[in-house]
Amino acid sequence: MQDWLSDHPLVTYILILASVIYIFNKVFRAQQRLPLLKEILVYFVMAFGSGVLLVLQIDKLPILQCMAVAIGMMFLLRIRQFNDKRLAKRQQQGDTSKG
Image (cartoon, rainbow, N blue to C red; front, side, top):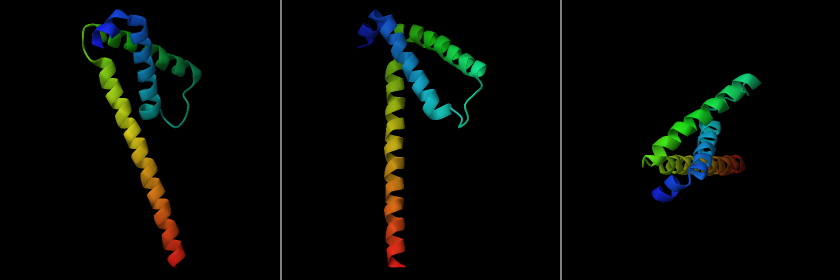
């Protein structure tokens, strides 16, 4: 897989950029939106940083694989939060029916 990613740098760059944007929006984004110029600057810096990560990916470092693990862990966290919320709701309904 690493060789295929090295042979297709445009696809690799797009995957890295999409991963970086997804991770940023899910983990680091504040609740309030940034002003438009700051938002543009943030995405420009992410695009530039993705270019640096592309160079590292082509040099045989597992950048995309590490991002896939990070996204997978974020997905597992979302599932756990959903499950905890559902259990708390079920427990709260059980407490109100007893009282």
